Length: 233
Image (tube, rainbow, N blue to C red):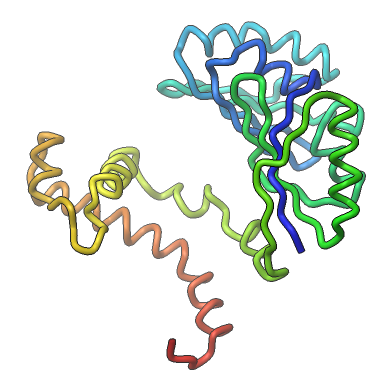
């Protein structure tokens, strides 16, 4: 079984949207009922995208079900009207390929990862992608069949929804500053000083963040432990 990541440029609706707003990054999830899009960029660009949504609705013959603003981001949910003529993921499904969410868009390029046990399926979809635009293979890897389960098993919403924004911010910065490295490249006192908070507050945020992520991962850790059995490796 193989996973191949494609870099695509075409004039289908979502790639075209990325061409119109090249400085905005956005991600796409689709379950054949709704398309969920998350846009990240400058507020003025996000406002322009929101003003452009009626054109997207018209082109896809759809309508916006929900939208919300955050700091530097815009989330939009559309009623899905994708098919093999206007969507790369529907084209992939028509060739018996699985796709990994989310699809990534930036600067008019679409990054799409596909999975299949049959190499001829990749050849077929590559030819299809080339017929509608530019197509490059940027990564190719063999994967074990059980790893497909990992691709779809963990919900990011379930895993991260209990974290506050502050906990998430401090956890990400702690990771990048080397707090979790061995040996540590930074200490809690240094991070607390950088963010202007007390040692105990920083420690509490980090401990709660780690505990909440582990609580979300616990079922998957237990499954993996049972799969491995008593092997001492």
